[in-house]
Image 1: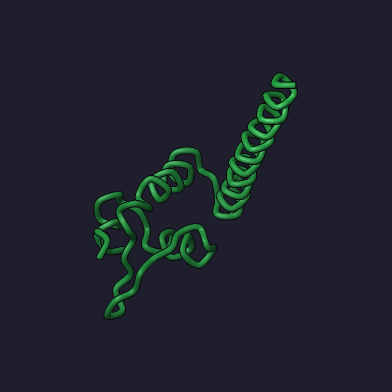
Image 2 (image 1 turned 30 degrees about the vertical axis):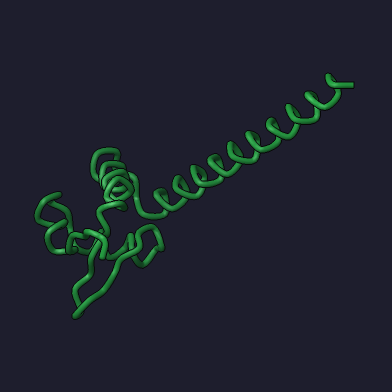
Length: 100
């Protein structure tokens, strides 16, 4: 089983509202595991949670803004990946022509 932390512990540690956490989950921005009606966040998802928390509380970005930013960052990462793939293919094609 992966290491995880309960929603209630996160609320205490980060001094956030439980409704903010629930809104992140309801908006599909966080994935949680539920066991015995207790919601848990996997440790591997903590950086994402912390990023959303910082943006919301420090930069005062509302939930729709977080959703837009998250979607744009996800699309940028996808474009970067696709660009790397295309550059690798181009390099491969270029190497083939050099051998001729």
